[in-house]
Length: 44
Ligand SMILES: [Zn+2]
Image (cartoon, rainbow, N blue to C red; front, top):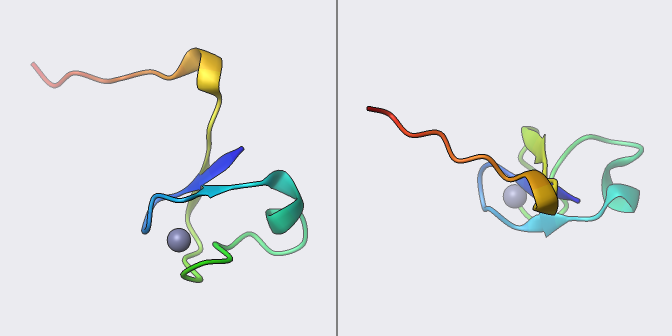
C-alpha cells in the first residue's frame, strides 16, 4: 500500500506501477505504507 502525501488517501500498488502519482489528486509524492511497521517520529 502507498499513501499520498497530499490528500492522504491510500493507493494500491497496481495504481502506481506505471506512473508514480496519486490517482485521486495527481500529486507525485507518494510514500510506501507498511501497516506492521508504522513509525511515528517524535520531535523532542
Ligand atoms: Zn493524492
